Image 1 (cartoon, rainbow, N blue to C red):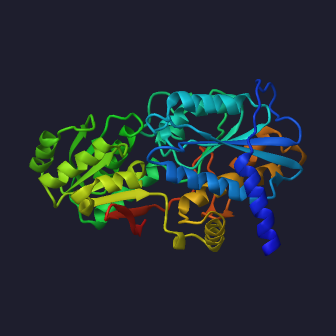
Image 2 (image 1 turned 120 degrees about the vertical axis):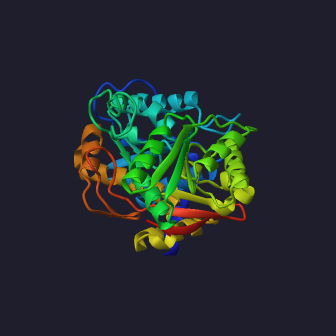
Image 3 (image 1 turned 180 degrees about the horizontal axis):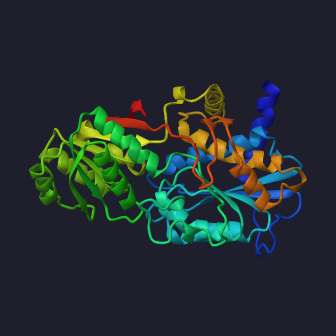
Amino acid sequence: MLARWLGLAALLATLLAAGCGGSGTATTNDAVGNQLAVYSSLPLQGPTAAISQQIVDGEKLALADAGGRAGPYKIGYTSLDDSNPASGRWSSGVTLSDAKTAAQDPSTIAYLGDYDSAATALSLPFVNGAGILQISPGSPYVGLTQSLDAGQDEPERFYPSGKRTFVRLPPGDIVQAAAQVRLLRTLKVRKLYVLDDEDPFAMPLAQLVASDAIAAGIAVVGQDHLSVTTGGVYTGEAEKISEAGAQAVFFAGSGTEGAASLWRQLHESDPTLALLGPSTVAYESFAADLGPAEASAYITTPALPPRLYPAAGQRVLADYRRRFGGEAEAYVLYGYEAMSLVLGAIRAAGPRGDDRQLVTEKVFATQGRRSVLGRYSVQPDGDTTLTRVAVDRVAHGRLSFYRAF
């Protein structure tokens, strides 16, 4: 065991320092030589930095566990940061640069990212155009894989090659909307108000929740698009919600300071009002900004408590704690599985493990895979059959597991 961990530590140290460069445009469907590259693009700064770092560390751990190889191929790994150093949030310009870097590297076999749906909407056409497999540990936007309540020409506009190359590991918006409605029924909510922050990647989720709520016999007494800004005053919106007799508000949007202010003002107006949000607000900085409104908050997330994952997942989390120290959350497992899925596809392709199309086909052929996340299959649209969603409450400014659906 000691020898194994010394070897693993050495390989992890190499991966921490190493990167896979490359320039030029790939002109064939195959990567070049016996050295293949896997790129990761996540926001390593800002409010989701801790989540992204755990995903990256999980990816590195999976590659280290595989000895840095898949079949006859050596696998190089590059972690890219798609955030803007000034704002700490993902940047469109940086995201496009990351995608182009991966697409133009002839050795690239897979791209792991992005975390934000809007970032994936930018990177996916470039990565797909190069015929490269893309696996996201986040990006729940429905339009990336399905047309239900999505934008115009979606999801087709994300796939200029005409072939599906994108896989989303965690449950997407459709599953999350269903979980929100199950939560509403558990809370015995009969009247719901639905808000979104005018983000085109959040608005479809608001519509999904509203439609599912109506189908479940819950009255949607109002639905608004709301410009959410830091320092915004939402007294008028709170009055509308109160006059409508709503027992709960579902908010689809980002976990900005402005969104936290909105939640605080809604709670101040009516402390009995349940405040529900999706995974796009499920991070600690948002929870810490809620103040007294935390008592009314319910937030869905694909990150289950470690004890709810299979034995293989718990072993990986224990390995992570020994190697990196600190708390190991489910995001480690999403990174670990994203890399493991790529490596398994390369091995399954045998001597053609450098064939981008074949590796992608092997991933899409995944059925009944026993993974650190649980058993799942990859569906033709790129979603997986993983459907468990956690609901977190907030206590003392920290997210705290409440229950799972």
